[in-house]
Image 1 (cartoon, rainbow, N blue to C red):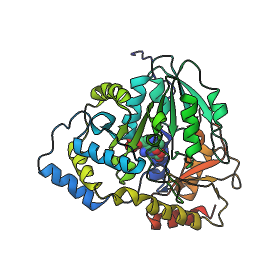
Image 2 (cartoon, rainbow, N blue to C red):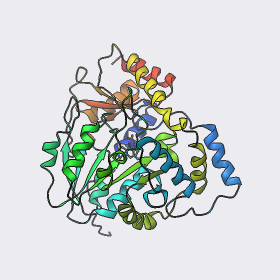
Image 3 (cartoon, rainbow, N blue to C red):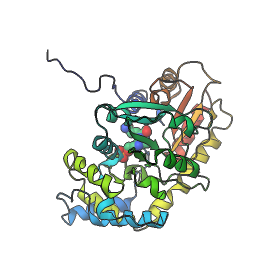
Image 4 (cartoon, protein in one colour):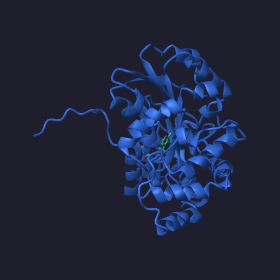
Length: 381
Ligand code: PMP
Ligand code: GLN
């Protein structure tokens, strides 16, 4: 038997795979893994096909086609009132996961410390550890999931190479405000820390709040990389397309890794998206679309024993089930799938110490009919 020294000895099948598989097996309604059950826009699909038919089927430039990077630069300029150089500051990636992995690989060396805010999206930790980095967790606390930046700053040492943040935040659905960004800017000032800000839900912020991007804070942006997902934005998570933004000196290093872990990404899809987003409503209309779904799910769940927490951004809704069961969240999520026919994600798996706060995450990126069917089952519990 070949002997293997695993670089990731503790990694197991992701909770998203586990819960989606269980949902299929028990024919349960799947509100676990974060993907829409409705299709992406016909117009976008036609654009992809048009570009394929026109012969745009060979390698794209390493950093992505200029037209798409230029559209993204213009969109962000209109949002943040500053210019971004499409040649130097934007790279198109195979989804945010690749952008995150590439950013971490480009900067984190063996023995470097990386501070993660937990509960943390599941790809950050293995991406750090496979590069020899050491995860330093900072735990958010209920009910507000606010960061105490003085306590956070205590975690910074001379080994801290990177801080990973995520706003709007998966899985808590909380968002950073301007004060959070300023605090982060303050505590990283004068250090060599790179900030990786995962902004895949940048266009999914509710109740008139404004998404706080690192792009909007010049001193913070000077040390940051921001990651985005077209899959989350355009209802096509299976296309695995996204992008990364950052100042030229960081993007140069990012591209050194990008060039050799993917080189370049899907050409016709890049052309299609660059045309599609010329209609800015494809992006700016998303908040209203998903806020309606959040509110519908909230109304449908009225009278249930689940207690819904505030959801300020993302397409996820946290719910406390402590009035229903004392089981740990993983067991309860599995039993709920099997016995009550609705799958959700248990939150403990996003903490290094598997802290169980009796919370489940429901994805509301679903048709109104499916949300109605799911809620009808959930209120019986
Ligand atoms: N970051 C967060 C916070 C996510 O929820 C996801 C899942 N979409 C990703 C990154 C990965 O995005 P992608 O599917 O584009 O790789
Ligand atoms: N981002 C998705 C979620 O949070 C899952 C992506 C995946 O399955 N890796 O549910």
